[in-house]
Image 1: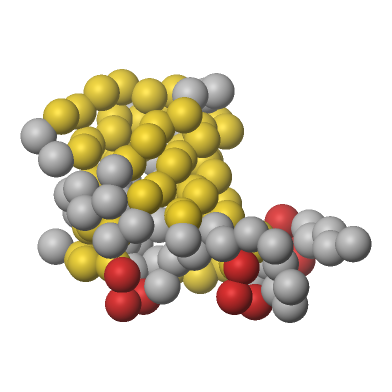
Image 2 (image 1 turned 180 degrees about the horizontal axis):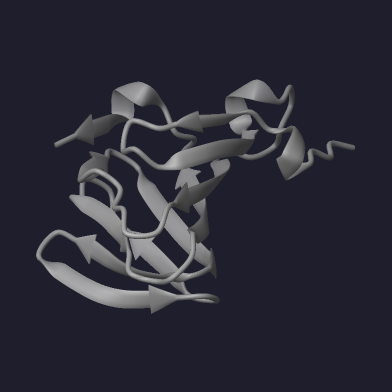
Length: 120
C-alpha cells in the first residue's frame, strides 16, 4: 500500500513558474502499475504560469479558485470542479484571475520528464 500526504511533499518552483508538489510519479514507485505522474499546483493571485508545451498529454483538475486557461489559440475561463484536457505539444499556460490562490492537480501521461517540456 502506498499513501502520501500533500503536506509531506516538497514544494518547488516548476519550469513554468507554478508552485508544485509532486504526489506521484510512476518512475519513483517500484512496481507502480501505472505510467502517469500527479502533482498539486498553485498559481498565486494575479500571476500566470509561463507558456510551455509537453510532448505528452496533460489533464488539470481545478481544486480551488478561478483561472483563464490558454491552449494554443484558445482561451476559456475555468473554475473549481472543472477538468481541462491539454493535448500533447499544445502551447499552454493558465492565469489566476480570482481573489485567492488557484490550486489544481496536474496529471501527465506518460509521467512528466524534464526533457519532454519546452518553456517559451
